[in-house]
Image (cartoon, rainbow, N blue to C red; front, side, top):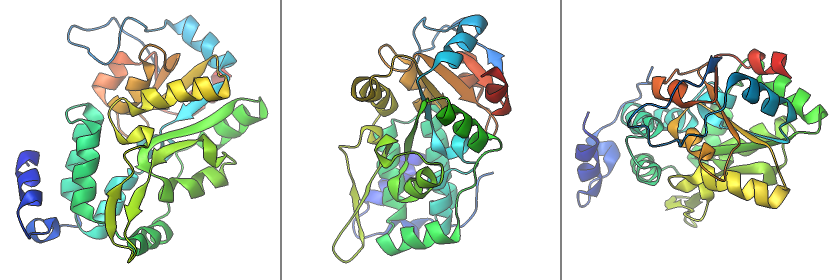
Amino acid sequence: MDLQWVSEKIQEQGQHPRTVYQTGARPNGQLCPPRRAGDQTRSSLCLGDKQSRELWKRADAVCFDVDSTLCTEESIDELASFLGVGEIVAEATARAMQGDLPFEESLDLRLGLMQPSSDQVQEYSQARPLHLSPDVAGLIDKLQNRGTKIFLVSGGFRAIIHPIAEALRIPIDHVYANTILFKEDGSYAGFDHTELTSRSRGKHAAAVAIKEQHGSKSLVMIGDGATDLEARQEGGADMFVGYGGVVRRPNIAAAADWYIDAFGSLLEAL
């Protein structure tokens, strides 16, 4: 399916995207290898096995992506499915995660298709609560008991993520995510463009902000996609752990400092 076609349809005067394309269908530990020609997300910062494990043990801040990492779902895709535009929004998500589509463009496109109201977001959150990935709650608990600060850094939405943060004893000011804006009548009005994670390299900006505001010296980013990997750029995360327990992305596995398929690997390494 051509996303250019979708964009053109969205812009058609007087035509709502749901009337154009509506469906409820749903989409269906490795060392860092040498940097490949054409890799643009990373510089030559890749750590070796020993360095990665040592940094992991002394990390004073750990940032988790939420969708397909902390949780097994892609919450934006799930919300889209709930609203009847699941398949087309899932494709935009996949392209954003692979780095094929600028994140801010993808977010604008997806929200433009969904047009969620405040009541619909609340109804979705109650009807389809997200599920934590295996062992991640135990990992976070152990890290917190060691004094490690935990952050959630997501391109998803605060309205959906805040309840998860509260359940995991993660302070709300440790959550970096997007805010959907609504009109007085509760209808969709857009999203907050000032949120760091609303744009490309937003997770890198969040990592930099965490270091500056919380004094973190050894920050680890854990995630499954290209937007998570961006946090590893100069001045951001000191290590990137790629997670393939939900979706394995070869380009992310190839560029990660450490690649895992289960959070038990990180628990055992503490």
